[in-house]
Length: 536
Image (cartoon, rainbow, N blue to C red; front, side):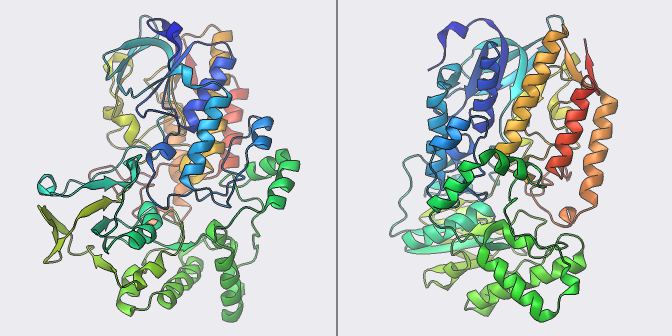
């Protein structure tokens, strides 16, 4: 329940979102003595783990790393049960954090922020919600998440379909029973790959409609070894510090090879890839140091996974359809639990809609590839309008009525992934131009929350009413983000990192590559009196 004392007042800060970012941001600001009001469209905390309740939903960063480090007591008291935590356990953790630090009283739940307008005369943000409430705050902090705006394709005739439809990113809290039903799943990205094996076990028949195959490796999930957990907890500070120096802020304990795939014999490559395949998860990409260095070196890893798919899937035609023709790692590598094996089931069919797309929905199902498919239920595993979608679905207007949608019409432009010129006192947590989705999200969230809190303290100490990114600094930062991406294989794929999964969205690589470099650069900005920010 919201803190009634904050209603109707001009506040220090409004925080939008009650996921891991919004919760920690609110906690920090309250600890500093600021008046804070949070808004969350769901009816409780958890963010992406609140909405993504689909069967098989699981984190792809190991449990001991995908957690907060700001409280040693919290680190020591919480017990994870598996190597990779399932959604219900992560949501339980979020609820535990909210209870432990008494965070819910600062939030209004089942309330969406619809618009925000910067009032230059008063140097405040006027924030509107779908309940009709208007709140004024000096700072507006968007903790809306990188993967929170579900991408729902506009299929012809969808409104005529008579069965239930579900999106993996907005799954019913009560769950779904597919027993005895003919189910269609559209999409084979991460949520599709995670959910398809579980839906196949329930459904009478499952038809998977695939546009683009994805690389996936076994997660090798297992119960978390209590001795391993205890050893990490005994020296958690060093464990976190080591992870902080990794490119993605996790995996310091991975067995990383430092030799080149080109220096290994075919037999040595096979043995090494097999070893890392058995280890499971993202560690597979550490089999050789230069897997991500060039198309030549990457091909060895990609070919190995394609060979594995051919060995697992018994129908050669289906196996061929499941083999990506891209480089491995330019899209987020998926860690699965029996995904490819699912296509050996008699009740599962794969339909390729890459060259012959879904034509239309009908009252009884859909038509694709010149065929009709009768379906009792349809699951859209079509992902998200990533990184910018949740921000741009709110009507945000900065100086002189400048719309964030208009400013970002050709792609997002930020300084440090935290702020955008023309929008004073507006901060974006893990926004485009920051490591965000290419790092451990909880680690990135903590770093951003602490940085924002420190910037606000600095502004208050220096009597700054309007803290705003400078346009020149923003332009330089956008160039840095682009140049770093061009030195990698990431632009080789039409991925959601570039917005390629959303029709009409500008193709711009959005994350900053390299967490330690990012932290060093933004810390230097702060050390130089927040160089690149104008203060008025």
